[in-house]
Length: 129
Length: 363
View 1 (tube, rainbow over the protein chains, first blue to last red):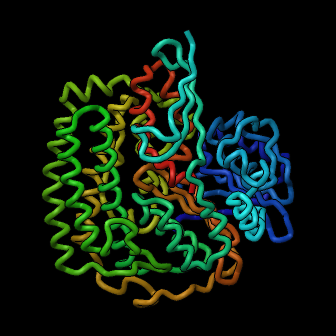
View 2 (cartoon, rainbow over the protein chains, first blue to last red):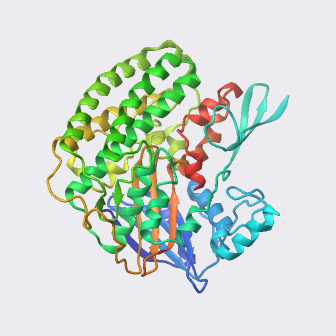
């Protein structure tokens, strides 16, 4: 079984960590995010290791610096996707066009993962009418 | 003169919807942009409403070609959260079906690529062999896709001795054939003219953008999760990490043939050394596992590249978050780089050369 190590970091450590990892040739496997029931944001930077994944997690921050200048599109696409799925922002990422969800999604806000299922069903009914 | 040429979301060269915008001067592509999400089905959202067994069935429907990969990777993530051990025979059965899935996926793409190249006789020959693989998958699981072979903690169905013998006989047949296909591809003038030097992705660009799987290996990047961070029982098998250095569409065609030869080796070893014992921890009827509040991420080498699942459990019977990222999500960003300075006529072939699964990516 692969290893999964969770390491807590602060918002200020995100960019220096990414620069260090890139310099060492470490692959960014993915950036993941989810929200706790009370709305607390969890954003994880998953770096590949020989045994699995080291997950560097920032908690409680809704605005984060982008690492797309360091990891290029390997970071930009996950960052844009997270911004469209939930209300977490990565500073410096071009959001002039949607990457993932349609422009009309929930009155042009998207963010399906933080919208309740009841609201999504209501919205769908409205679209059909 | 400059033009903007839209390709897709619906296009004859694409099996699934994606939109590319080409900025061209005459016949030459100068820049390109890719837009995704045309087949978003809200599967990650639905997963937060379902229990673990229901989610296992649902994620197998994320993709029609690599369905086993999704179910297996989700199962490994839940097993990681709960600390569940899988019996050795169950692991071997998972590997056998996983590698047969890789074989039929590679043969599928080879056929499509050969059709796009204009070599229809080899396309039909490849798909004839693919049918033999699909027949064996049907014999093992009862289905041609969505095999339902995975349960939390093992495999759902055993492989009988008769099926084991039939599978080994099928492997002998397709191994002889794939070596002949390999020789034809390496020497055929039509294939060379349509693919060599087309859609180049240099090793540096592949690493910079984060390409993975066969797409990266065709750009001479030696990465393969089965070797680099082994999961399940891959350490038990001898196989090579296939890499090809020419970084073009030709390289992407050849790499899938080389990988098919390696997959045949793995399936044969797994069948010949299939351990005795139980295949899962539950018996015939899967039970909802007890999973604490936890999170776990798994990297899996799917046919098209690295598939990742991150699962956050709620401590009851469900998921707080299931995050799915398929290889195409990492390989599609390389499309603009590959298209630059190529002709518009090759755009369809170049986009298809990443072996995209856009529905899978949109999930």
